[in-house]
Length: 399
Image (tube, rainbow, N blue to C red; front, side, top):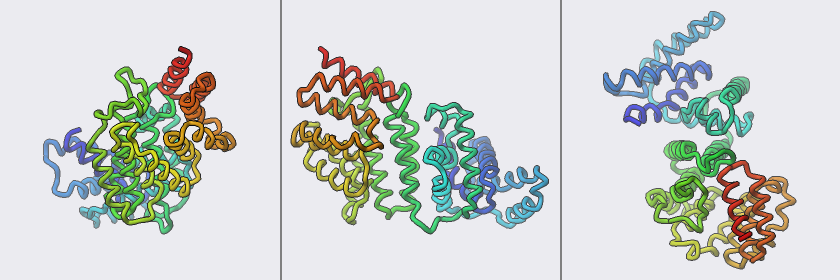
């Protein structure tokens, strides 16, 4: 991207947030902001960036909003009121909190997680509907309807555009976490990773961290994303196939991300009472700082997973805890911890349960049983790279 493109992408959610807060009309405001951004992309490279680029964009978008509302005579009185506000507003002052409020709006609890993600990527991330549809492997028309319904739900909720009084930050962080996870380990399709989604999730959580620098869980989520994404260059072979952590070339890991993630943790953990994202980040840091799988401090990882299980009831955490225990006390100890998980509907049919059981059975020398687990895991995942990897593990046990 050019410098102007980078600047516009950074300013876009702040402009939309400011316009929606001042004048409402989420849908129409988004169209107005898009036109203001287009005007800037055309004019600024030749005319130069204005002294107050945010104010310039808000003013242009506000005026365009007036034009768009004027085209509907049924809204004449509201348009006149907006026009009067724009006339006296002049060059609106920057208001960084508008971006955070926009995130809260997109993550409104009345919306489904899928709608929250789509609306966040569209309104705050600036991705086109076509880009979001491609990322989630659905037709563009389907994503258009999902985003349209989400906007209508926000409008119908009547929620004022301001920071909510309750604790809704957790919903925002969860949506950003889901976006990152879908990018890092795609649930379906031909690609193991969707780099655009992980990059966007990191960018957005950086933005939230900049607005809420004292929040420990925001910092923890940023550290977790950085420490996890640091391994991305080594997760796939040249042919796109999955490379498990035990076989990765750690020289390919992104050192700058590891150093930044550890630095964030060293700042936030001493404050005490870490939340789930901070604990997950600490686990990722132990992995990233180890020279090899064999030299990893697995006892510390077991202890951290024990803490994490006390903070959240999550079967995936229990699954990972079992793997860590197997690395300390042997595969049979890990398998024993998995005995109750098939009764948990949240993970009973998940391919990860079968894959982990296959891995632990392979470690314990139960090759026939391990092969069956790998094959079942391959049948249950919609990710083509995961399918190929699991079937290759099963085939290797036939040799």
